[in-house]
Length: 395
Image (cartoon, rainbow, N blue to C red):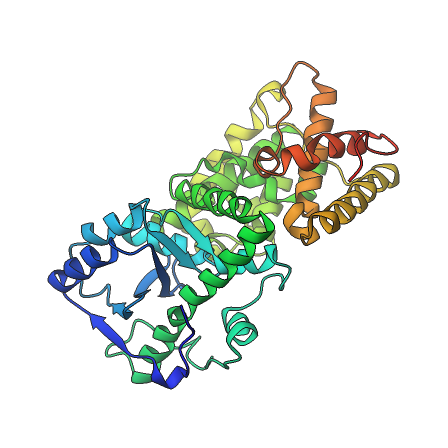
């Protein structure tokens, strides 16, 4: 498939009724791949508000107005169809939009940004820069921050939206051919499938682990950790129920401060920085009730301590593991961050440390290291992070 010659030559069709959408969906299910993108707004809400869906096939571009559609079942069927690859670029936000609006994930998924990283083209490259790299074409960026919920949408907005999918299928074909030649296509497909699973569970996630993002809480005592865990889960549920951003409910610094102090009264709660009178008026009693539960929780029932910052010796182990990844990635013709990012090495190190402290427990290896990466690096990484001077196998 060739690239369109000029952005000004892109034609599109607007779909704003159920019958037309159903006809198009039947046609799309006959395709081997579809390009997909979304436009949405998420400024004052927790959940993204879908404003436009863009789909391109070999015949052209369609723009679906979600404000006019009532029957989404035909499009859900397209998203679920295992015979139709859904091609997106930097898809994480789009996946959340589709989950919220349609209740389904696009699968099988192919992300051209992840593919570009696999091909050593660039890390986290933008769609515009990827098109420029492959087609030598400059795409406009002027409508990125415009109001996508306004109606009618301007001609400039519609053209911008159409261009966001017009080049994806040619990019997909080029990248797939190169990935096949390198023998890495199935690795990319595995990573994309894992991403779909991650967002598929996002809406109904277990919020009990949200407190782990507060890295400074390694200093907290048992009841403080219990309070932090309860507050973080409560804020997440509250933000989703009210459809407001998390920080509109309670800022991170205030949440951390409350868990640290464990206030027992409204007056003590008011003394914490960034806790407003409005928050105390509407949410204070429930928060104080959560804190009371945490204060009286037996230590054995409190969450385990958060990992401490690494000392110099442990940091040296992490550096050796990273150096190993650099060498191994070069041998595999992969960028370092695709083979194993630092956060992945750190997660594996903490899992090993936890197992050392509780030998009867199973090693909780990060999911990314249980797939195609496992036979390539997992055993060596476990040895290096456990303190071995060098891996048994060599890259």
